[in-house]
Image 1 (tube, one colour):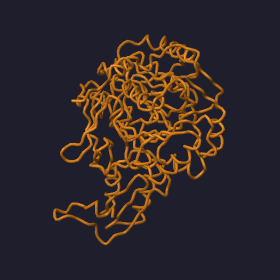
Image 2 (spheres, one colour; image 1 turned 60 degrees about the vertical axis):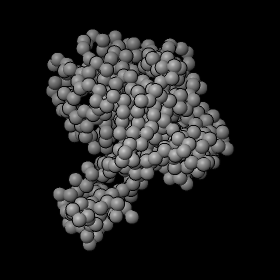
Image 3 (spheres, rainbow, N blue to C red; image 1 turned 60 degrees about the horizontal axis):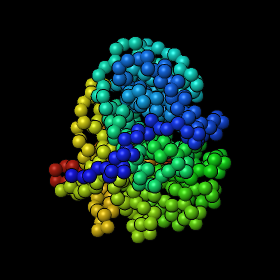
Image 4 (cartoon, rainbow, N blue to C red; image 1 turned 180 degrees about the vertical axis):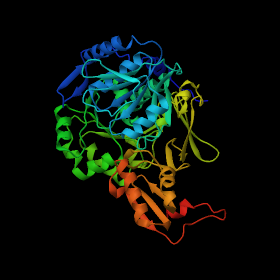
Length: 474
């Protein structure tokens, strides 16, 4: 059994990141809207929204149409303080996918921060303003039962709008924020750019961990390749750039080490496997600026982050994802699957409103679905996946879902890795299948070059007739 928290971690983890201390230290910077908020200012805004929301009794489920803006963070923290459950919805989610989620979970509240847009809602919702441009949409019917410890719902597939979500408790959400602080040695001097969506578990963990350590956040919707992005980083003396593998591909391509501010001290990579050559280039070039590269591995099911590879070990262990974050334990089960135990493990999954009242079904132990091993130095290496899930550009995609969508048009198989998706066609109209595949990729907001389509004489199969995906990947 893992010893989850050291005495120091246990004391610190009792301090919920959403219950921060009021101070004059900067908490949020929104340069696009010319807003700078201290922790005292942020607390005032949260209190104002709480005064309005506290009139509603009972534990509620709230959807937040979320972007990297002050309104999203104020609503998120206010709802956590009130003990409600939250689901952050991407602003890029298509209206049909949002409708699917609303129908599955019937949230009592839908929060629309200033500047965000929302399509038509069911007639049960009534709108009212909540200050700072925030609009609340509320249902008039009585709330349905929600587990008292449930804090956050995170989609397992942000690209499809599938109603399947991860259920995270207040304890798990807060624990991982503090685990990340400990793993990265974070403090009040840390200032990160929020270039990742808060509806994405990694992006949200950046927000949570910086609030947990009293650091600050530059709220940005700009892309890494934009000149304005780098101007913001320099103007506001950013210390930390978090990113998925694609982020670091772009940094290499645009010469990020030349554009980055002198204040930069940390680069944090998660969201999928990064090319070893890019890892080496990144840590060698940014080290000259005094910035360290931290490689992290995680899953939405563990509130985002599970392991970290220290910068001091990169030179001798490129490809490893490091050791468990403080309070966690990694082990390998009988079939070679990576198993994680820690206080940040989810309660379980949900697919509808009734599931939100269910108890904790995992008791802190998460079978990750990844295959790997732990070396003699205690570092974890991921070698494959039990389930066919890939993460191109940090976006979690189930290959079986894509294959099922296309299979109605012919006999085919779908494979891929964190850089591409490949459709192997045995029978069927190649042009039609290719068009449908491109449409799927477009809806996921991935580059068209992510998809490849090939015609085959026959798919490799076992004696039982099962497709041999390992043969297709050779």
